[in-house]
Amino acid sequence: MDFTIEFTFIINILISIIAGVIVGFERQWQHKLAGIRTTALVSFGSCMFVTLSTFMAGADSSPSRIAAQVVSGIGFLAGGVIIRDGFSVSGINTAATLWCSAAIGSMIGAGYPIQGIVAAFMLMFMNIVRRSLSHKVEDLRSE
Image (cartoon, rainbow, N blue to C red; front, side, top):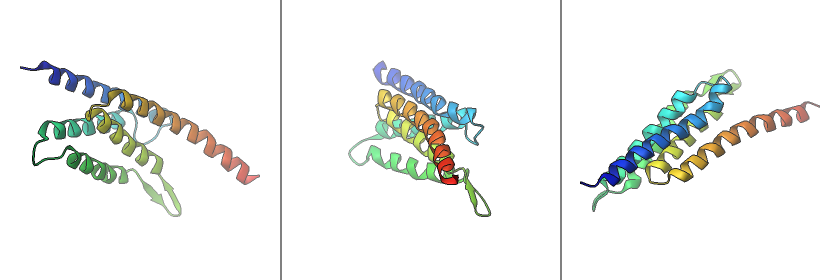
């Protein structure tokens, strides 16, 4: 029995959870709808689906088929956090963050754990920088 596959699976699952926690930390800190638990679950779930697709890959199966369904399924899930109140819409960044968390988990599940962790830190960094940059643009606009 080849324990390399099982060990790689366990490591990738743990890395996907850590990556989800990294992304969710900033969201939780900002008191957003989707925080550490949600982003960790999205990353974990997409990692499992993509890993499953690689296990099932054969002559009549393509690993990209399940990954493509993860993309659309997460889009549906993320749509649930978008809230419209009159002319105001909120939750779009949180929905995009969930979608990106699924991409990170998918990368890790496809066997790219280092790239997935780098992407998680980049996503967290983008959310932090985007927030301060958008506030500065609003300040300039209101002058």
